[in-house]
Image (cartoon, rainbow, N blue to C red; front, side, top):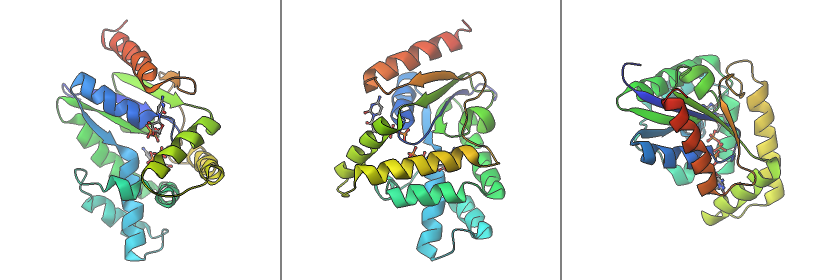
Length: 213
Ligand code: CDP
Ligand code: CDP
């Protein structure tokens, strides 16, 4: 990773990893990639083509064509696209293409903060710092419901909770790159933490990891 500084952030849906990743990227002067958007964008491309989500060849073509700089974040944030993303994310050959593109992004100097499910375990196992962010399912459902409603989409919190639990289960149970903490990851439970408190805890850990303490 010649010179690139990489911070890996993993965790389940709506745990707060993306918020943390953005703040940390700004703080350390690094680029940021939300790798979940890459899976969401491929799923969205298949849905728009009217293709079956099971068509791995079409998914791979969409993955090669993705422009990481122009994601339509509002549209990709819809719960049904998150659900479709977790269904295609079990495909090993699709993962190979996305992982290789994500790794290339990370290795460009000066480095980057990547958030997702397999950053510390598969995409960037040599990252200088690895965070595994969790929060209780109820807290995550409440946060995600508020977030989706703020985008003007009416949703029920119970439906969001069910979606989150189903995705957690699928992401943790899949054979290829399941969601799990890297053995050397720092576990951060944000259930009771404000965004600022979570940021301070993460920054403290990363500063120590960077100086080798
Ligand atoms: O990226 P991920 O799906 O893990 O979650 P996120 O998009 O960072 O956070 C989901 C929502 O929870 C956002 O609306 C954040 O503002 C909110 N959040 C929070 O209220 N408290 C935290 N400590 C972290 C995130
Ligand atoms: O924002 P949220 O945490 O709800 O989901 P996301 O990070 O946008 O990811 C959507 C789906 O993509 C996840 O449920 C995973 O199935 C998949 N994903 C993955 O397999 N590997 C990653 N590095 C990132 C996302």
